[in-house]
Image (cartoon, rainbow, N blue to C red; front, top):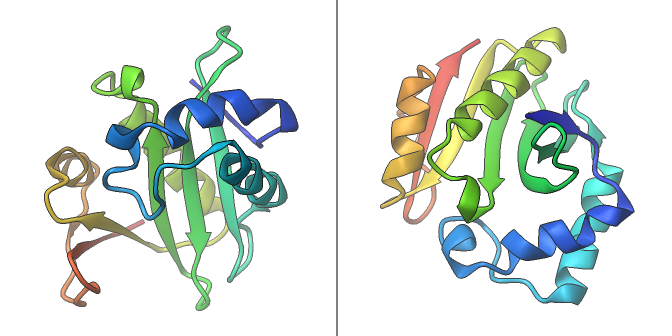
Amino acid sequence: MLLRTHRADDLDDLGRYHSDPEVVRHLPWPVRDEEQVRAALAIRIARTSAARAGDWLVAAAELRGADRVIGEFVLKHEDDGRVAELGYALARDQWRRGLAHEGSVAMMELARGFGVTRFTAVVERGNESSVRLLERLGFTPDDDAAPGGLLRFARDA
């Protein structure tokens, strides 16, 4: 898998999974139409670095040689500069292939280079696949209460 910045020609690929109810079921956005995907892509194109506190980056994920975006990985560098939140979304046909793990590991490696010493992740209750992934990555439930039906996880870098 290759992680890279988003490009304008990613629109159709993003549309495939941003409009899939099963993919967005546990994400903080609703099913998106083409106009909403276009707006989301514009934000992603502008978010290319998470090197400083307050920055965030959304990396497009594509399979090597496939020339198709199959998901995205998010890194939000928190305001204190040492903590980053990790997130991801993958097209449904890419689930259960180890790609969420691979991309998450790559994003954490990148963040360590920015001086991040702790990672957090927020998961909707009932999203057992993401909970298992975070546990495999060494995250544990965080004592800080997450809002609503969310669970917060953390791990040291």
